[in-house]
Amino acid sequence: SAVISQKPSRDICQRGTSLTIQCQVDSQVTMMFWYRQQPGQSLTLIATANQGSEATYESGFVIDKFPISRPNLTFSTLTVSNMSPEDSSIYLCSVPSGSGTEAFFGQGTRLTVV
Amino acid sequence: AQTVTQSQPEMSVQEAETVTLSCTYDTSESDYYLFWYKQPPSRQMILVIRQEAYKQQNATENRFSVNFQKAAKSFSLKISDSQLGDAAMYFCAYLAGGTSYGKLTFGQGTILTVHP
Image (tube, rainbow over all chains, first blue to last red; front, top):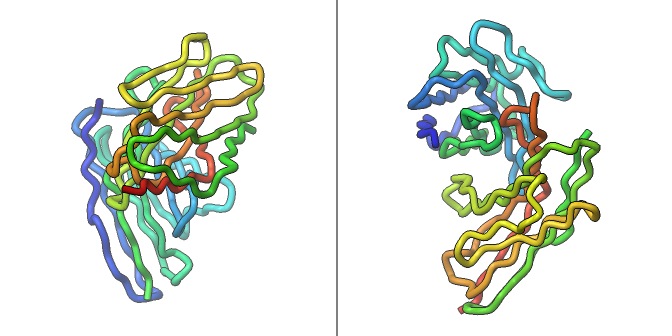
């Protein structure tokens, strides 16, 4: 299994500002995934972060709003830009197992936008 | 596209009793994996149990077991001898083998309450 450290664990932000969430893995992984979980809802995939190439975004999510960096095989950041109260959610990063048949999650970041 | 459906938004059980959470999925793939995750208020996603589609035998992990009906595309979770610590949101999830490589599709979730 992989150990994933996600920071910050929670934050309260003013609307119009941006927040960058960090995800550090204790081993090299080819892909990292970013999910959003709106209050009381399920997890929705935002994008797949690939090392050395642009992130791949799911329908409904755009790079200008959720820019992602992946500088190496153990680290990724997700930025939530120009925040509004609708961005209040839990954001989680996830990495696959070596075989790709299982997924491990960070502790999640609870974001509240006021 | 694959879909996962959990039709029970909320379930409750008495401590020490048994409860079953339902999940159905839709896929045209033959190689896939199914999971149940537990999410307590701490937000951490905890893997409860995993089932490979090619295995006919139902997976079990201590008090947790699944009823995997491949033809019916059904994947229910049975929790036996329920404990207060089992209270959480439970998500059913699907992962396609091959190119999906760790990318999960989740159901809507079921909130489980355990009464003492």
